Length: 478
Length: 139
Image (tube, rainbow over all chains, first blue to last red; front, top):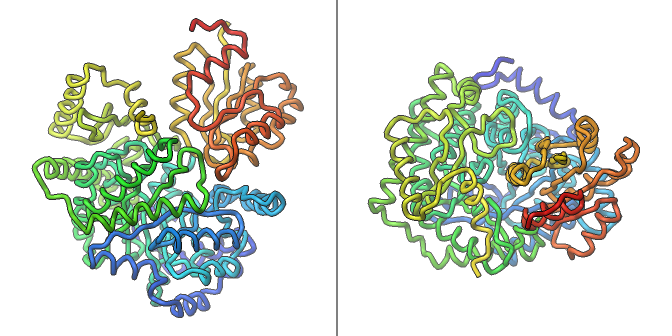
């Protein structure tokens, strides 16, 4: 099948679906008609899209943790803890990395060793090995919607299984994850794998079942300049729209510069709607999700809570509908369920105290919004131009040409020439812009901001400083 | 003589940032670094060490699957005739907050010469590596 942004035909989708469902024996348990009936029997409070839509209408920020463990009963315990002790509005099922890479035999070994040793040997829930029937026990055991979080370029079978189990949200998209979670997959393959997922969600939507889609936006989580993050989010929402999806969240990681982070959250939906409208789509529901700090965390738990609280404040100031939380265990690995719930609760309390206060748009924030908009649009316009109007083709050619680039990515098909660095006040700029299609105005603005840091601190802004900036937040303050 | 170090992230783990930073720091410290990046299988580490006649293998693991991904590695090194190669491992090696001493011992028993917790200073690792490989330290 040739890559394009056209909606997959019924025949093509059916053929691909048969292949996906035969990747592991549990795929055969998916009975689409039964799945539709099951979703329609669930209360609205368990539907991700409906909960998000209501929150956006009310200007409320929902709290969503990550989390997953090897065994079903332990996962139920984790989600109940996040719900009851943390006050999570939306619940997670993070899959383990074997599942994310379709290594189901290894995942099986992880399940068995977890039972034998009495501790989780996997970093997530191996949903495919369990199959929809067993995973449905998780849906039955909690009162909130569940989203599948699976940092993977291979979402096909995992999405089938989790939707069949009753999950109503799916995080991931065809540029972000293939760039950030694998070493050598071609963009074309990653895009197709997520077209499958988007087409599947569109199929369920046609049958009255709302499966909410969300793109992750944090990319490699390493000081991603918001212009790049938003450009990728817009390209991914256009790809989802191409398959018929109409309920979507776009995400972005916080860089912990209040003015720039808030500006990025404020400008995000507007840029999405601009390009959707150009593509003739006027009925897309969009919400904006913000991810608390994604880089190295302070090992000191008190300092970690400080990062988490600041994340909650930025979420509210920027008017985000969802905030994805971190925990005080982040520096040392995967958190205990109590620590995970504490991260949620800390965030929730801060949101409550913020009372929906939005940062007033002073000149600084407005200036950042303007620059972010220009950077994102330069990248998106170039991609559309390279694709002769087809966004899927444009993404592939854009990466080849370096017109789209992602800093610090493991995938060899990203050029990795762009290197971010902070400016004198903490906003993220570019040490190197690589081949990003930036005009004179953006380049000069960027250079002037970097010069300000050099003058202010009398240091050379170089590669070493860029590495320092990535580790800066985790360094102890005392 | 310049010592050669194989560097990589084991298993199906994409955490590349620390990997790139450590590679640069090792180069700056005078090592010949063969960085084979992320998603490296046990076999690939060993093959790279044979091809380059390396002195040490440094394995990173951030995703929590380190224990499963490193099982049997020492034995495979011995089978491949690299039983004496210096083995270093570090990162977020296990799932959950476990007592470091027991994690450290577990990996030593698996045959690693040095085992580092998350957040270890790169300069500590480098000075240990110089000592272990018999390189004189200036500092």
